[in-house]
Image (cartoon, rainbow, N blue to C red; front, side, top):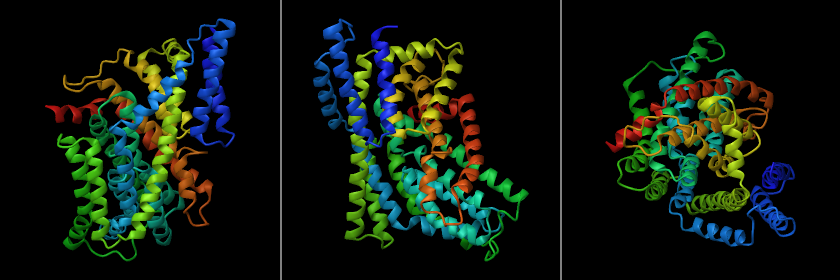
Length: 461
């Protein structure tokens, strides 16, 4: 084993160990890169190790950071974040919940179905897990508990539905994935539509079956009224503003009218207009949302800069070749290697945020997947269909890890806003069925890649 291979292993180990020190992740990534640049230079200078490291790596890192600032794709990030945060304040979700609850209150589990549908709409409007989980939890958990719902079904529904925001476009995670792998953001957005809807449909079917088998755990709304056309009209009227915004953002991208960056600006403006329309817009709201947007964007860009330095040093040491050698040496075959990668990403999701996995792990394993020889039909018009399918599978895997005990991020968002009578153990038990449903959804997408590729292919014909 060459010295550079030992350095790659040591670099990964150092990174993992430093994660548990409590230092900000951006500093851990950048600091590890600086340390191992120095180690590589010393090894080359004093021990003739030929690691390939020299002082030019520092200048290359600076150039890469400057290139980030010229990246128009990444401009979409603060705009989509702003759109999501502003919609959180607009009051749209509250109106949708009231009207949908009246409509679906006539079936067992109707309120939980309402949560799922609102989660899908919020996912297509915000793309931010934290905002969706917190908003859904605050709006619906007290109502479900008052109505006599099982604690496990209530919290599981909120957590599962809130996590759809990381997959259903416009997802900020897909924007970063597209940038890292030089893929089309529009292709990934279109490719994620059906997988996201499949997961939402699985949730709804499960809730309806659960309500049928255990009606006492998902009771009818005691204030329900007979089905009337006015209920349907109220639902349509309250969904329409969010639907128009979704169409303006995603429709313009899919139709080729705007780039994702331009569409993100349209979405941000549309969110402001909707907040004003609902009388929720004020200078204080604008100030709070803008400050939160700055903080979130700075956090993401800080990690992005640290990860850029980390990835550059790792590759200079031959890290990509080490990873490729390990994966291609597995006796599993192409699809077995894919499953192994997804399993590793699933485990890493317990300890790392999606940003680190997207910026560090994904660029290392994507070339391996691309060269596995998987023949995914792109209908002659979709570039890199195998990578697009793989990225969506990674996105679903990361979504699953957000729900998985003991350290799924969505679980702690939820615990922070749950009533005191709901324990962390209740949340753990509640999300297990939804984790299983997500794994079923992943298997469906894995067996039928055209669920991902078909929509981008149709858009280009």
